[in-house]
Length: 504
Image 1 (tube, rainbow, N blue to C red):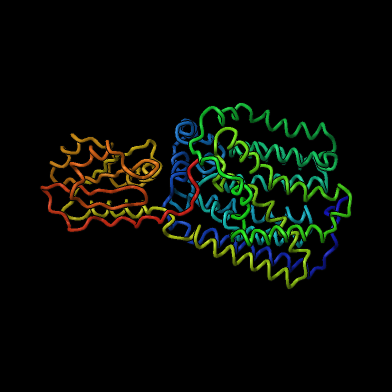
Image 2 (image 1 turned 135 degrees about the horizontal axis):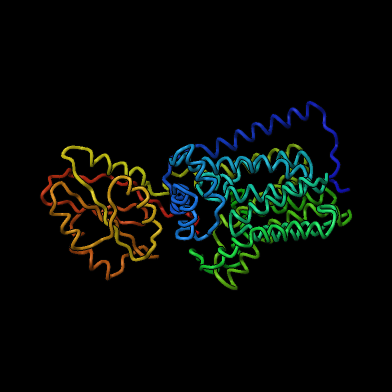
């Protein structure tokens, strides 16, 4: 039996304190994830998911999935479709589902830390998960990454749980989670391979036999095989470029926040914690839990990085490695549980403070996203004021699809018609009484308008009001026959180039 197989008995008082700590941790995790949840408008990836989930039927969802979502992963939109039918389509309603998955991950971290090491590790892992900047960030987005991370963590919990107390139902639950993970995102394939390799380190303890091990992992692939082919029948929508290896080495920084100095301290702490546990002086079997967590943390990002250099350069966005965060947090937690109490609390609370500082800039900054919701509401309000006017928005862009334009369309179509830019139609609209036209212009990758598009727009945009919302330009082309207010509806201030994830 390994060190995690037998836990020292704890007193009733200690169990009460542990339960109380977990309740406080879950409350903190929930507050951090719901705070100002609906303040920011959806961004492109979220709009893609909302459009899928807002379809009136499952057939319509699948038809649209192949048109607008490069992941082709169906599970999260299907769950969200039913969720929105009950709770509505607001930003808060759409994101609340991910909040639930994120809080569930925090709870599962307790079980994972306890099963892999001990009770104290479980509590600290849950604590770190509650404050983890990237876990909080993606628990507030209408995408599948919070679900993928929760399912990944649940797979590992079931794996370690079955190692401690074997049961057939745990094997079946593990297999079901593998299937769900594969339907959640193509990255589930990487985690399936990692789980298979890690459990092979002690296959008899994890599954009882090689036959059972093979049946579970191969069975998950067979069940999902008819759908997996759709993950590879098209080119990636987003390419990050081939990044140097320092980006791979720095992958875990976002899981806790801080800089390279904090990162070095954490790595040293993890090594010290493992040394204090005496794993270096024990049998190979005692290395299983740390080795499994190390594989979980290192293998998926490394494969993605290698693939980016060999084939399509997709490594880079933090969301692609988010499902490795729990492994890192548990490794930190096992170290905290093995150092003296004063040092433990100092470092633990220090990491929480570092995370909170990071949250202020990457989660709660109001300038992270262009405020299309407020702008569309302003247009709708303006149309309702006397003298009533009809507003039409025309769009022109150097790239299709322009992701910011897709987001703008999602919001503005609720307030007014959205049509492609056409010179003759624009001239006709401007001659109509009580008609006002806005021109929404998106540039290419450099955000500058090409000379050809600029030449087309020049006769219409010279000497008129211009605003910027994010990378887009907004021109107000007022009709000469209509007396309009001196100022146009004020759009939201432009975001200051936040370091945020790119679309899939």
